[in-house]
Length: 310
Ligand SMILES: Nc1ncnc2c1ncn2[C@@H]1O[C@H](COP(=O)(O)OP(=O)(O)OP(=O)(O)O)[C@@H](O)[C@H]1O
Ligand SMILES: [Mg+2]
Image 1 (tube, rainbow, N blue to C red):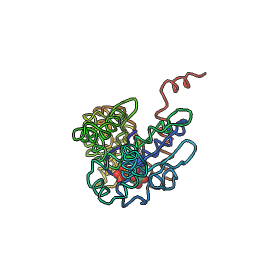
Image 2 (cartoon, helix red, strand yellow):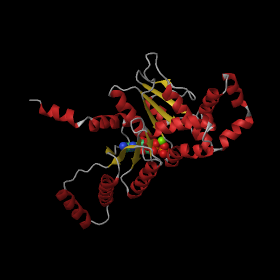
Image 3 (cartoon, rainbow, N blue to C red):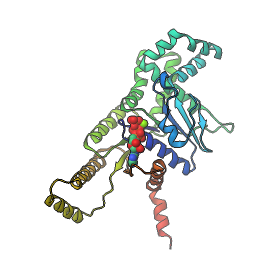
Image 4 (tube, rainbow, N blue to C red):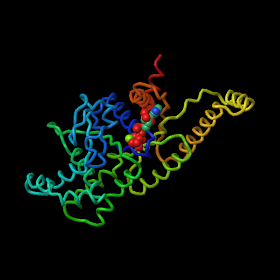
């Protein structure tokens, strides 16, 4: 599951909440993020903090019985790739120590992204002794819109320059996985404001044009609406009578948020989940949002049958 969207909309928070919700539904989850460059390999990670994972380079760490965390790294993926194509593991390690090769791999964005994709594929291929996938569900917090698209466009870019050989093979494998709606889904996070909504609709189209399946949209930080339509009009008249006021701004925000929600509901080409804007001081933000996700995603059938109980 790829979590994407513009900067600051809540991707990391939502990715952590989705992981928590899935774990509480009994699933085994690998929560992943992308390390942006070799220089910040040890920089703090909000995602790791949200779930209480200790940083550990590019290795998978176990957070709890069903939750693991990993920071995907281009270098680790490139090393794994060389290891898979070279006859001896030591050759891959030696090659990765060559400054010229490292500089070459770091210079080309497509090769960096290929590294990330390759490490991801490697982790998804791992199996447990009983033959089941080690990581049946992976939730990947993508850095920013540009990166999601770069990752989406990557297979086509690479295949056009190197259609055959080991790179071509692994890219094709990655492509098959990325484009299979039974295996991959993108979750686009957005905010209830006009511009983010426009950008999200464009991103949904762009992702679709690369053949990457869209699983859902998350409208994050929707303000609480305490008013009935009549009550709202009464409050508006009251505020107008008393001149410019913070209350009017709040009402304006509420109206924009509702318009944004309507626009998304009409035009977003996948199911839409709405998450509340919680107070900035809310402790356990991720836990609260996870609880909300569990509530909204419980299947209607089970709710109905629960309601039908005498
Ligand atoms: N539903 C919410 N209610 C209240 N605050 C929220 C909510 N979702 C996210 N936030 C806050 O918004 C800020 C940005 O969230 P987050 O870091 O998850 O965004 P992001 O999209 O991952 O950002 P970046 O693009 O920088 O990676 C954080 O301070 C977070 O606590
Ligand atoms: Mg983030």
